[in-house]
Image (tube, rainbow, N blue to C red; front, side):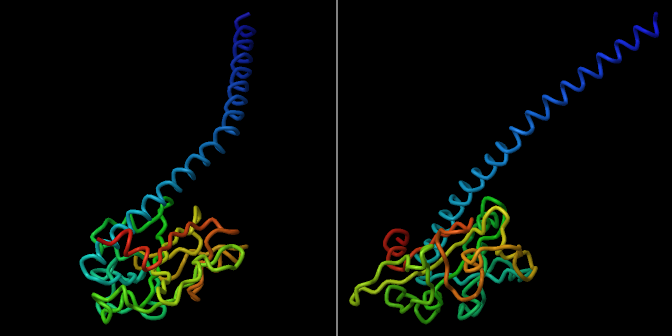
Length: 233
């Protein structure tokens, strides 16, 4: 009789375990997608907050130095890490990099998006050139192009007497970070497969970017005149 009683108790225990596992499976199937969605929403919110914080830091720099900061070299190490180049010129490929967070006096975490990937910082070279210190409002430009997903210029046509142009672009490369600089002294960018043309456009080196469209990138861009008017004191 004792053996039979033990067998029944064991059977009930296994049945109860099966029911519990089934319930956990159902809850997991519902809860995990909700958790992922929540984390993604939090990452997007944090990204926009960090982008706004970065723009405020750049504005403080422009207010003090009367020019825009050059990007930092993502593969730099030591004292050069997170610092704009000493020559203070960023022509060509040097116009793209990571935020020079140490030069701006901010934490490294604000140089990254809400998914902990480095944001790409691109600036019109003339605005960062020391030859245009105190004359950023007169500097020529037009090196950077931002398009809509339809291939049209995101910046409206400008009147000839009041020309404006895109001063900077700040890019979060999405949840996976494909296209973002690896940084921390390491060369290259995070790679991925099966990318859309819009996604590729935002991390190649032709200085043409797509705001929206078939990509998870989050672009924050400002024109020179708008930035000086609304951000710089």
